[in-house]
Length: 313
Image (cartoon, rainbow, N blue to C red; front, side, top):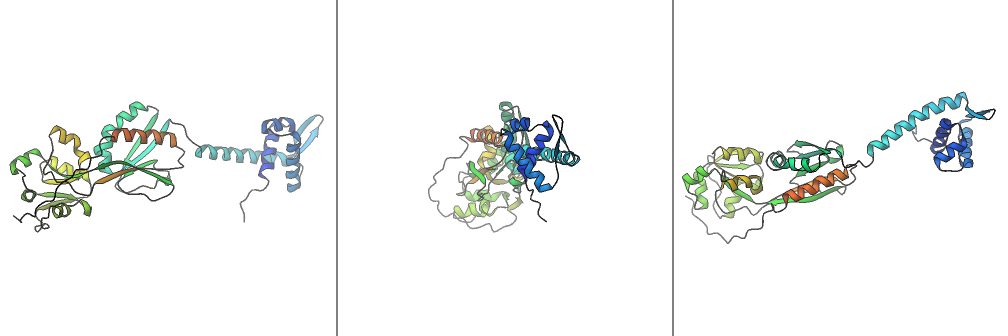
């Protein structure tokens, strides 16, 4: 059975005429001629096989069938109006749903979010942290921030920031061991994330040092940058992590870079949103603010010379 509504235009003209009880007034509201209204209603009556209006003196009134149809159409067009309103372009003010990787949200975005709220007091940001990518078209989020490239045509993606991966530790640990050579890092516990290109094996391979032979050295593998940073803040081992996530701690001296060498693979974070989102105005306001906040935080490329192969200690 087809759900296609026939004579929708005629039904619209009749609905307006049933409210005004005047073809002339209906034509004025619809911005058409009186003849056009009369023609559409006559077309509808021929299709239904019933008369919808009758004259009582100079007044035009609805027949019993016309009254029933008018009540149904009033509800139908009200429902259509609500549907159109729910998907049309929204104003700048309102709610914005933002999702990002837990470490990014906790360590970079959340401490800065108050500045956006100060600039745009009419935008209510609801922030979610998740290490799984959300479907932007599901309606659950408006913006996602992650480190994966998105190939969907209907998604707008732009690079937010790019950062070096560096070895970090507590200053007390660095002082006690006095890291002078890459192999000195093997004297303490090592922490890494569960992403292959950011593991210690890759870091030592770039130093032309044999892979880790003792599993005891690899104290922990974590599934978020946040967990690893928490561990080294407590003085436990050395962790490979994005520089921008610990930039403030490095400047304050509460964390230090254990060794100058950085991984050749940077980490990139991208901001994503649906191109046809009805919340485009507030999305663009938030994305513009993100770019301002990240300006200058993209690490400049650092050139390092070739390293000599070092013996295993």
